[in-house]
Image (cartoon, rainbow over all chains, first blue to last red; front, top):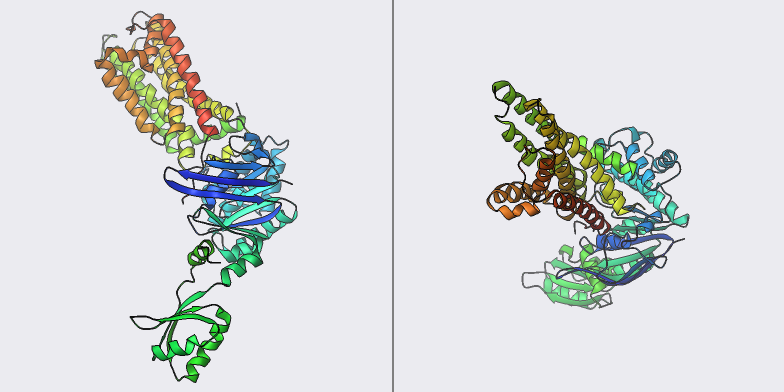
Length: 306
Length: 236
């Protein structure tokens, strides 16, 4: 059982702050590190895997600093986002080399075991240069698991992996979590994280935006005012009808036509809108959510108006 | 040293196009020596020019290509993280990579200088051995220097070329004092102590040997230290 503790860690490059005063504890089980691209997920994983020194604060593994602490790799298995460039090796040669570098007693057997876990035993005789993205991802995972680490860190492991392999990988992560390993993986897709992780940590713009189980995070992300633009054949009539609805927080006429509507309960709103329109004899021509992107959800989370 | 790193580095060195170029350099040098030998009746003609070419151009070039091949691409594309995420001392990794690059420099840089000397004038093997020994000393220091550059910057090839061609070559010929901080001059000093036919830069054998050893040791230590501080950066 290993615990990774990030304590008020910051990392900046010149004037750019990549990670800003983040504190979190990663415990046994699967933790999802969720955030949009550029949020600082890779920087955090680099800090946790000893490939980056925090500019301030500390990152420890079971109480020991990870930076410049080579022995930590006996406990950590890292699957970086970086592509494998060992194209001249076969998958098996690569995983065996990893086992040898860990100083394992029987590198061959350890490599076979790891290859079997990721279902790569058969293609392991081929050179890595011939692999698909998903196969490379699995070989990377095998090389990270070869020494049976108690901490596994994966940076965007589902990127470029086809749906079948994605399911397999998800099962694998859940299994590793249930075995008592401390598994952390990063992703920018909420659904992906929800399916695997018990604990979710959300980072946005280098800041720790939210932390909790997926139910809490899902509520945070959905129970928020949602913005729509509704265009009808009588915008003013539509606006006055909608403001009478309890689910609607505010309405505003758009100069270019249409009505901006802020909705507190979007479930109720979607049921009420067609009925209200029919009651008032207004034809709705267009209904567009304006802030449905994950980025806007994330910025809502850090906006402080929760 | 770590046998796995040795093996992987050797594969990285020989398994790529760079391996071919590495082999071509001494080949061209030897062909040139044979041609000069066949077309000239006087043994001394061309000896200086060809060994000079081998010593001042081919040797540092081979050392540069070998040193940057074992480390450069992996550092550039970040895939060295797969080697570094292991409980292996960074200095052991640096030493293992150095040994592979050094062996290539000796076999494809220093040895051809010796062979070239023998091809050009078989009657004076001492002179050829002197050039070979000087090349071995210079090659040892060059490899460590270029390996350290590869660990420091992704522009190691350019900086290495500037160092050997501009600093040691052009400027070294114009500014006499540069010989004190020129690896090639240290090697020549060693060579001149073996055969008086090799022009001596006038540094003293002791200085040349100590400078070579210090630079090699520092380059090796520096490479290991840089690897300890290797930073993984994402695309973000």
